[in-house]
Image 1 (cartoon, helix red, strand yellow):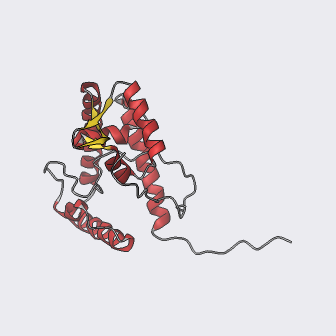
Image 2 (spheres, helix red, strand yellow; image 1 turned 135 degrees about the vertical axis):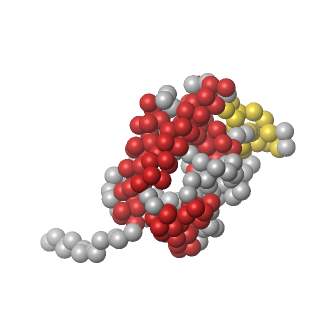
Amino acid sequence: MNNPKPNYPPLRYLSPWHRVSRQLADHLRARSEAVGAPPTESHLVSYLGSYAPVTIGRLVAVFGHNKSTLTGMLDRLEQAGLAARTPNPDDRRSFLVDLTDAGRAVAARIRGQLEEVEAALDTALGPDDRAAFARIMAAIARVAGAPAGPTDGVASGPSTSPATDPAGAHADAAPGPTTTTNSTPHPNSTTTDPTPERE
């Protein structure tokens, strides 16, 4: 005997959010590859271009990758000559991750791609749209129990201030790889790794 299929109402916010996140990630990944960025690590290269040197623990906190996954990504970046890990002078039990000259050149190209997408969105959106976007992002942060981030200021238009990362929650980076294919987010798709910063 077959169980009847649940007749759930559509998710008004999470499904569209998941779908547009995948669309944006795919679009940015293709653009990053076009400028020579590694397809599965471009988000790391972009972030390191703004905030390096950083600890591996910081990268875990920002991107939510577990340490084994992150280690594999960093291995590939080092093999490609884009990044390097060095002992942390403030804690000999941990390492700092920085970009090489080649890595910084790739990060600059990725940043250019991101700024082009930002400019296109800014052209398509008006002040009321940006104000609504800021309210939506603030509401999501409240529901998720997260601190309000720099997106609270998007209503005033594009930011020209230097990159800052006060809480590790604002990644100036292309979205990372997306592996889910369902239009409804998996309940465990946003898990974070509480590993402390020491490696």
